[in-house]
Image (cartoon, rainbow, N blue to C red):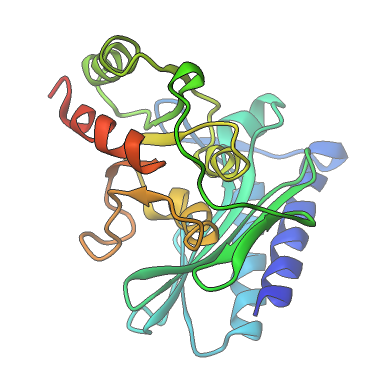
Length: 255
């Protein structure tokens, strides 16, 4: 399975990359600061075909409208370009994200950032790696360098965003970053560059690839893939156990 998943994820990323190197693309707004391009739709169509051929009995759900075999016990949750705003602006942190949910639980996943040529892949029983580097289990939190990444949907009220930021800086005494791609942030978590990811208004396709990939490394989180359909907003924190416990209360801050 993992050989096929790696090949499909890399091919999708390379396909998206061609739109940044001469093919060009149109941009549409789904909402304020919420963009979609022809590249998103093209890559999702490619993933639908490739995953259907590789895993013909599985379901597939995609950000841009794909829904195939929704009753299957195994569901591939895909985001063709996570971080479309970064993609449109020429920033490097965007990624293809593919997660496998089996019986409602994360089973495996892959995240590929083409510009950086970084592929995170792994699963519940297989461990994880970035490119050829095998990743260790989640390390204990070092409070002196504690760092959380944020992923706020464009519809998140400003009061909630500022309350979360104030809570991280004041109550948790940790630093924060907001890179514009939840999938890339989860790769950074796997590589030890951050300690947790906190999202407001995210969707299943934003998180399924990264969470699935590191599901065997001992990270913790509040995401429940059985609680809501894939298109429903998710407020969550995921990362090292100590950070998740400390930050979980911030999910209701400012409400």
